[in-house]
Image 1 (cartoon, rainbow, N blue to C red):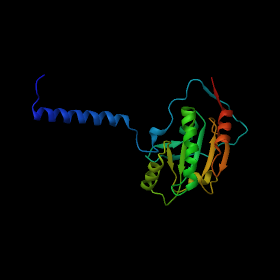
Image 2 (tube, helix red, strand yellow; image 1 turned 90 degrees about the vertical axis):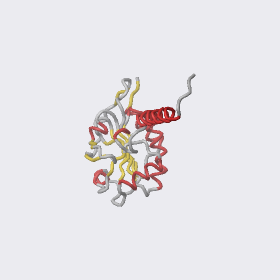
Image 3 (cartoon, one colour; image 1 turned 180 degrees about the vertical axis):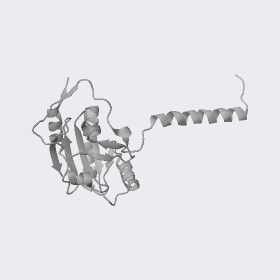
Image 4 (cartoon, rainbow, N blue to C red; image 1 turned 60 degrees about the horizontal axis):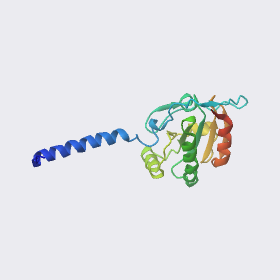
Length: 193
């Protein structure tokens, strides 16, 4: 095997490093809370039960922390949505993140799980640092003027809202949802197979 000159070895190492960087860049996701955190296609074996007696959920017309516009059609137009109202200073919200992560993991693309971060004092940079510290995997709506919070009657975080696939508000849990109760409600409106 021929020996390569130091210059060729150095050039080959630089090319290999550049290719590795490109490959890794394609494998990383965007910023926490952005559009790449929205669910994919609803699985073929999933259908949803309609709850016609429930009131319509308050409209949402907002943006994720990466600036992506979202509305009710984006969040619950094809599937139910779990909305978790939170702030960066709320320790109970941080504790609730484990419930939200478990629901996101176990229900996958059958539902949308999104955080609604609202606090006029929370700038996007502070919010992003907090999301990174918690390892948040869900899309995050930035609601600094608390417009969405007020429409859902959120007085204090955390609060969890469940909206069905038809845009009807099924449940509100002030203080955050109990995981078992949230799963019971989701299993009632999601049918597999």
